[in-house]
Image (cartoon, rainbow, N blue to C red; front, side, top):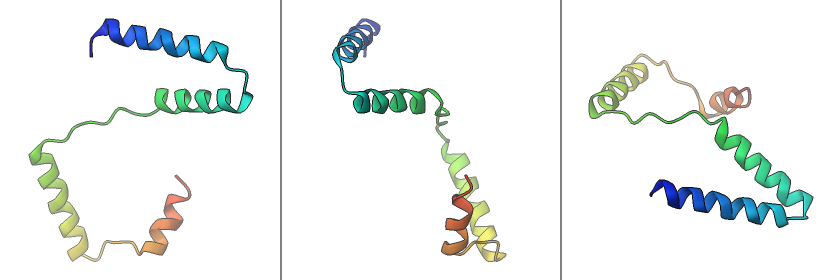
Length: 79
């Protein structure tokens, strides 16, 4: 997508936001922008990196270094 097209889209969005009078929608827009600004960029992995991760996971499984579904859910609540 060209830089000019992106800039035009931004301007259109700004114009639309200016006309909003619904506080709940403005909060949603704010949250969306804040989440996307603070989201770390995802790194594309190479085939070699993916294979290495899979092999490491296989070793963890063989060694019993795993979590139950219940334990994983408990851990994820603290993220």
